[in-house]
Structure formats: C-alpha cells, structure tokens
Image 1 (cartoon, rainbow, N blue to C red):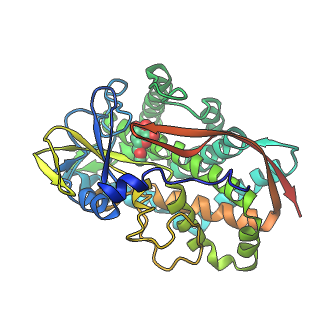
Image 2 (cartoon, rainbow, N blue to C red):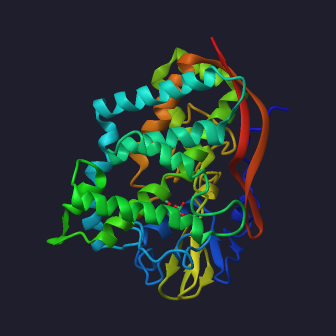
Amino acid sequence: MMDKSKLSDPFEKARVEKGYGHMDDQNDPVTILLRHKDVRKTAHNWKTFQSGGEEVGRIVIPSEVKIRDTRQIPFEVDPPLHKEFRSLLDGWFKRPNEPAYQEKLHKQISALVDEVLNKDEVEVVRDFSLKLQSRALTLLLNTPFSESETWISWGTHVFRSEGESLDADKANILYNYIDERIIEAAKNPGEDLYSVLLGSEVNGKKLTHEEVKGIMILTFAGGRDTVINALTNSIAYFSEHPKSLHAIKENPEMINNAVEELIRYFAPLTHMGRVVTEDTQVCEHAIKADTRVSLCWASANRDAAVFENPNEVDFDRKMNPHVSFGFGTHNCLGATHARQIMRTLLGILAEKVASMDIINTDENIEELGEFDRKVGYNAITVKFNKY
Ligand code: EMZ
C-alpha cells in the first residue's frame, strides 16, 4: 500500500455529528470548531472571538502563556490597531512576488535539490526542509545568507521540545537572538527587516523594541514548523505519486493549483485559538465567556459540505476555498512567502527529480483531546533519484 504520505481526517465523525470537539490544554480547555462554515464565521467575528486579549500566548494551542511575555504582532492584536500594523507590514511581506526575489529563491532551492540528489539517503526534515525554510527566511528578512546557519543549528524544535511539553529554555534561544539582532540594528541600521521596523511608525509613534521583537518572533515562529511540514509533506506526497510530478513537468501552469490543493490537504497548522469575550453559541452549542475556542483549519479543509471528495488530492479542483492560511482579519501574513516557496519547489522537483523513494518514516502525531492528527513527520528518510 502506498499510504505513507497519507494525512487522514480524524475529525469527520465529530464534524458531521456535532460540529465541535473538546480538548484539555494545561487546565484551559478548548472547544474545537470543526465545520468550514463555523470556522470562517468565527474567524470573521474578532469582537466575540478575540486574538488580542490580556494573556499573551493564550490563543496558541498548546498555550504559550507560561513561556512567553512578548505579544506577537499583528497576530495578538485586534482591530483597529491590527490594521495599522498590517498596513505597515503587508508590503514587505509581499516582496516574494517580485521577480528579483523569486530569482534568488529559485537559486537557493535549486542548489539544495542538487545537494540532495547527490546523496544516497536524506533525512528530509532536518537536511532538506529545515535548511530550505531557514535559507528562504534570509530573503524575507533581507539578512545575510550566513544567518541561516545559526537558525539551522537550533534544530527543528526551537520553542517546544518534541512531544507534549513546551520548553522555555529553548524558546529563550530565539528570544535572546532576536534581542541581540534588534540592539545591533539599532546601532547600525541596514536594509533588513529589523532596521526597517525600528525606523517605522504606527499611529505617529516609533515602534518600540518590544513591538519589533513581537513582530520578529512571529516571523520566525509562525513560519517555521508550518513551512517545514508543508515541504516535508510535499516530498512524501510526490514520492508516492510520481505521476503527479511528471504531470507538472508536462504542464507547469498547473503549479499554482497544485500548491493550493496540497496546502489544503496538508493543513500545516491544524488549528488556532481565540478567547471568547461574551457568552455565545456556535452551531447551537453554548460557549462561555473567557473560555477558548479553536478554529480547526485542518477539519474545515475536509468538510464535504464544501469540498467534493475532500480526502482526495485533486490538482484539477475548481473551487478551493481552503483555510490553511486562516481566514478574515488575521489571515496569514506569510502566505505570499509560503506560496512562493512551494511553487518554486514544485517547479524544481518536476524539472530535476525523476522519482523519490521513502526509506523510513517517523510520523508526527498531534494529540488533541479526542482526536489524534498526523500533521507531518518528525523524520523521514528519502532517496532522491535524478533523471
Ligand atoms: C505563533 C504561531 C503563529 C506561536 C501562525 O502561527 O506559530 C507557532 O508555531 C508559535 O509557537 O508562538 O507564532
């Protein structure tokens, strides 16, 4: 059976029968919203379902309240201030649409694919996806390529140790690094994101170091596991579906649809929380003020009310309103970057790689109360074969 790359949908039964599920998380339980319609409606309603509450880190599941004091921006800020930050950041984060940026990204990924094509076996998470993600991030931050070596040396789990627990010591490696980079940029401003932010204003006031730090932590953290999962799952998928890769080689214009469909199927970020500000109801289920809900992107993406054959990967899907990048106010700031990475990777794989063989896998299974979800791999060893 060719099913090592399969990501099954653990939410179906609960989604159809009730529309929600439950999980405990450090004594702060979460009601997991499972239907596409409810997920989008709830994401849209930022007044009742808040991101910017007092307790920093509470909307992340598992909660980061105990390991982080810095508010991530714009992720943990609600309108109207949210809009000010987004207007400041949107332009910078759309740079991956520029041809010169794309050329650099193409060079990086092309070199990395050549590297793995010359090896016998590759552990993809550590020796492909983490490297690709870290190197590409130097473009997004506009920092020297050599910085990526530091980020790669941190390993894949910067904030959490593997498995259940959050790891404050590990998180501090990142926070301290960012503090140092901010101090450095304040002394010697350059063309990098730190310097640009330090020189920017929101509502007529210069950004504070703490605000810059909040933006930088989000840029590092939000795009790390998620991009690594998307890249690794892509390698696994095309290992088992070589014909799809050949189809892309024949018809490169299908790449954009292919990327959207893979991202729908993978849902690299399973869910994201909100804090409920008043007693309310979702799908006829009462939800109390000051409790948490989560918007389960992974479940919404498999909702048969919206997607035909939701568990099939279909590059010809006509309508694809997936929510892998969230929805509404807080939709993913890094989406342009992530999409460009995925598109570039698919083009290069199709061009250079004849086939890939999975040697062995260690799956990454998230435990979410009544649900267990495979989100990717802790490790997966693959042999890349040239033409
Ligand atoms: C937060 C989150 C953002 C969080 C879009 O997701 O990503 C998680 O990996 C981090 O741990 O702090 O940045």
